Length: 156
Image 1 (cartoon, helix red, strand yellow):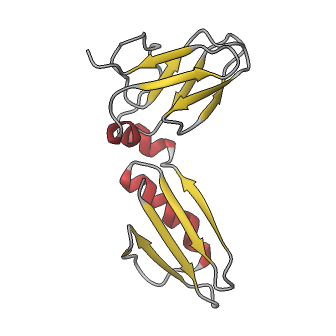
Image 2 (cartoon, rainbow, N blue to C red; image 1 turned 135 degrees about the horizontal axis):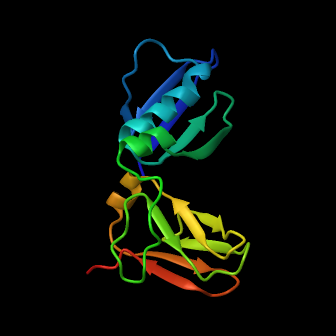
């Protein structure tokens, strides 16, 4: 996952680095530009980015920022897709499965997210296409209560 490091100086100005390299932006950046800037980086890359913010007082925080839905749709994610069957090719941007207990927590392996199953026991999760492209192959959904395991994206 790409790393965006932001250092905030005492005046609130930002030094932004993408993968440890200075990130060129138009004009000086201030604290109010942070959300727009990081969202734009995630949209441009088409993948979630890890953001580490280091404040002038020594405090900091880390967050994961995902591309906007419009960026995902522009990258080719479809709105309605059929539920993949065991061993079926993975549909870009969507992982889905059935057989879960209603309202159960569903783990996604390599665990990049958790999803709560709907009232009919199905789970559907939109993932950024770039994330799936970067990690091709099997995606596994695991029902944490039922033990249901759904494998999608298996090689043909």
